[in-house]
Image 1 (cartoon, rainbow, N blue to C red):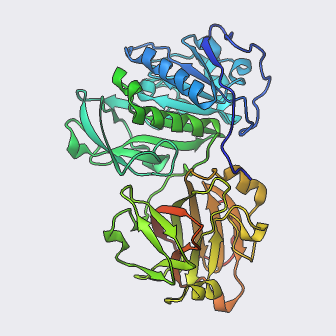
Image 2 (image 1 turned 90 degrees about the vertical axis):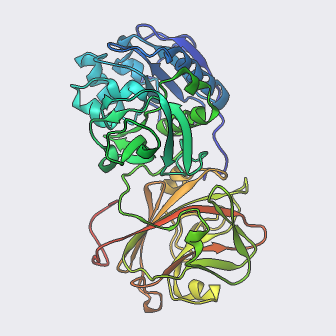
Length: 461
């Protein structure tokens, strides 16, 4: 399993012309599998057939600097002839940097569609949404098309997903100045919204109070990340925006994992505030501390913080977590399906734990239904982010069936047969295991589901 981040060598290329680049000239021939260390390469494409942003040079320089600092190669071009099957196969992601208008011909479009279908990554920045209005594939890939914008002004960005690498460094809100796009449609039903605009914080928003500004999605075999920020030159010198952009690129090339499925209908159980802890109870020794960034971190134990206001029977529980230890040896877990009790061992004996510790036996390590069923180790290892980075669990309970997704990938599917551990009604909780175990949690949310049969023939739903 991955216990440390990737180490790769940065090679920053110059301008790409007619499929030729500075730096290594040999084509890969076919796209390398995601996760192969040492060869991540990104193409920055900034051709314009309409309005041209004067921040494009700053944007290219910023992506090149991010590559040099973080271990991925960067080439840049304004020549659409770079969009050939052979040349695109050299890249893990293509960044559309404030492109405008119709910039690719039919053959180039077909090559790019095939590239995405083979697992390629797309990163759209700002006016990438003002591009290729008559190409349906591209509209779906970008997520939404530009409609209009007011004057450049400060606004408040509400961060909806604080585990994705593009937004994990941000607080619950982000105040910044930019040119804020209105879009022709809302991408929320198709993409996973990472951040949205508070339309009451500025003038000129036209999306009726639901105004996504950054999102991600799995699209027709590939990965797509889009941010509406990046109009101004100053954006590319802003450390928070550069980290936002870096996180989007890292996710698009497959260097880090996140759940980018659309998310609607969830109710927060813990939203990062002290007030949202009113319905939680500590069972047993130890505790959880609440930090200013809305994160709960375990200490001491063996104990458990559990939600006492309600039992749940058929639901999808999502929460974000990360381990502190570089070795991944931080013991904790998420408990489901247990009766109310001030004794944490009641949850152990009457419910199920989804393990977090990454160093134990297969049936007692990350993604396992603890001591009952191991996760699919290969899928788990591909989906797991290293210690110090956020991961997202979805624990889905329907009848006696319990499924676990890690960063959007289903890694476990278990059916309970023990009446004493019935999952049809029970509480949920998070474990603090011991003095040497530090695991952080945030954004615990739940969605009630219709009651379904214990087993289903559907896969990965």
